[in-house]
Length: 156
Length: 156
DNA sequence: TCCAATGATGGGTCGCAACCTACAATAATC
DNA sequence: GATTATTGTAGGTTGCGACCCATCATTGGA
Image (tube, rainbow over all chains, first blue to last red; front, side):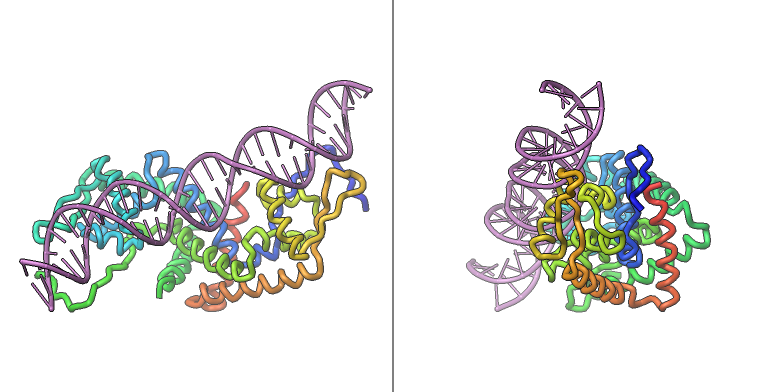
C-alpha cells in the first residue's frame, strides 16, 4: 500500500507510454539526440551543421553560385554569407567573382575543405555508430531505408 | 554545353548524398519535421509539447508531486512551474498542497485535462499519418520498433 | 540612358528551449 | 531552538536558428 521506500532518492524516469506510442515522438527525441551529438562533435572543430552541409554540397555537386547554394540548402542568403565567411577564413572554400556576372560569387571546395569534410563525416559516422549501437547491421539498413522514404516525401 | 535554360528560375533542391547517406542526418531532418508539425498543431490549441507531456505523464502514472513530474520529464523545476500555471488556468490540472508535506504540490489530471489529452493525441496521430504517408502499415510498425530500440538506449 | 531586378552583405529582430539564481515557505536534523 | 535542506516561484540570461530589411554593386531590359 503505502510505499515501502528504501532510503534512496528514487528517481522516476520512465517516459509516458502515451508518448512513446507515437512514432512522431520517438522520431523527435531520437532525431534531437542525433542532431545534438553531431553538433557537439562539430563544435569540437569550431564548426556547425551548415558548414558541413555546404562542404558536402560542394563535394557532391561541384562549384555553385553562392545564391544556388543557399537555394539548395534552403537557408537564408544572408546566413549563407556568414557561413561562407567562416569557411573561407579557414581556407576550406574559395569564393571567386564570376567574370560573366560580376554580382555573383562562385564558391568552390578547396583541397583542405575536402579533407575537412572527410574528417567531419568520420565524426558523424562515429556518432551514428554510438547512437545506433542497439541495432544490428541489417536493422540499421532497414531504418535507413525507411527514413529515406519519409525524407524524400518531406518537401513534395 | 552551356546550359539550354528554359526561361524558368530552375530551382536546385537535391540534397547532397554525402548527407543523406548518414542515418543521423535523416533522423535529424525527419525528427525536426515531426516535432515542427506537431508543435504547429498544438499551437492551434495554444499549447506546446511540454503541456502534452505533462498531461500524458499524469494520465499514465497518476498524480505526481510537482518535483517528480519535473524529474520524470527532465525539465527544469522552474519551467515546470510555468507549464503547470498554464494547465491549471485552463482547468486541465489540479494543484493541491500535500498535507503531509506542505512544501509539496500534488498535481492531478482533471477530467477536462483527460479530454484535452485525447484531442492532442488525435492531433498527433493525424500529423503522424501525414508524415508517414509513404510507408505501409507494416513498414510503420517496423520503423516504430526500430526507433523504440534506439530510444530506450538513449539515457543508459 | 534610365529603371527595375538581382546577388551579396551587414545588421539587426524574434521565438524558443535550456539554464541559472535568489528567495519564501516548510520540513528535517542536530 | 537554531541551522540546514528541500519545494516551489519569480525573474532573469544565453545560445541558436530562422527570418527580415536596407544598402550597394551590377546587370538586363524598356
